Image 1 (spheres, rainbow, N blue to C red):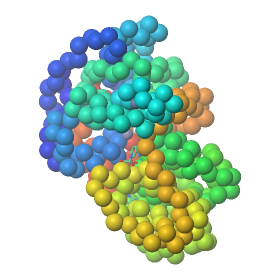
Image 2: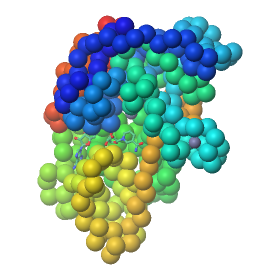
Image 3: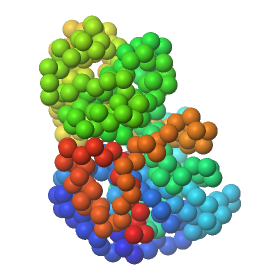
Image 4: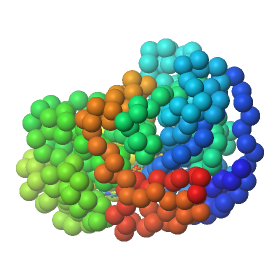
Length: 340
Ligand SMILES: NC(=O)c1ccc[n+]([C@@H]2O[C@H](COP(=O)([O-])OP(=O)(O)OC[C@H]3O[C@@H](n4cnc5c(N)ncnc54)[C@H](O)[C@@H]3O)[C@@H](O)[C@H]2O)c1
Ligand SMILES: [Zn+2]
Ligand SMILES: [Zn+2]
């Protein structure tokens, strides 16, 4: 079976992997769409783990239900790609994102469980969710990153009228901005290093304006939100971005850290100390939040199709990753059709 495999730093090749076998407790899915995520780009840049078949944001059709009686062959499904144990305190209280096993065997994020950059995958039956008829395969593949934005905004606990800055205008930043507005923010601004993406956030209607991280950032913040932003959502995962968040937040304000950096990063923590800033980490989503995003799509209360830039075949995976790390493209979500 054909797949797109990580073989080195900035190198993905078309290769072969074994087809999954039918196993009770695992739903076998024929993948129709899989999204390229900002987290995938981190793996791509370092080329590790070698052999990884990415694609943790996916939609597909059931080929084998693995014992899930409510699922029929042909049903369209998506899934939480994580691997929580299901037995610990975190799992039992509906917070699988805290489970220490959540990423061990995550689909598309571990060597054990190939993701959607291939045609057939096995996914734990308890994490598979049916896709309503009026939700497209592309939308269903975007439930996962949308749920990350929702979780971040739930943690931000925005009050009506607050001013919010979102640092980074990828899909995580854009969905965070979208939900910040829905929660009642009076002004949502994005900051970016890539002007094309910053402009797009405004064009797509999720931000009221943008600030360039490369300009006179502190002054632009004061112009947009005199005294600073009440809430800043950091969606990049690098030192300059977290520093921007600290520069932009008002004294006593709140920063939600969503961006991922595997390496330790240096930040001006003195600002957090002297301004009594609350910094909250945000990881993944709860199962309820994942389902909420699908419901919002079904009820047409959110439109994530506008975040999709194009659909490409498996053979264009490498060049799509290159486009996304270029820092110049205005593409947001590139979706792969593994059958092509
Ligand atoms: N916490 C979680 O559960 C979770 C889940 C998914 C993704 N993530 C992380 O969130 C981050 C965003 O994901 P994405 O898919 O939107 O990625 P992305 O790469 O599409 O978007 C990141 C954006 O940040 C911009 N950027 C980089 N440095 C900046 C700076 N100093 N100031 C302003 N903008 C800057 C980039 O130009 C880019 O547009 C990534 O680090 C990803 O790993 C976290
Ligand atoms: Zn993702
Ligand atoms: Zn657990």
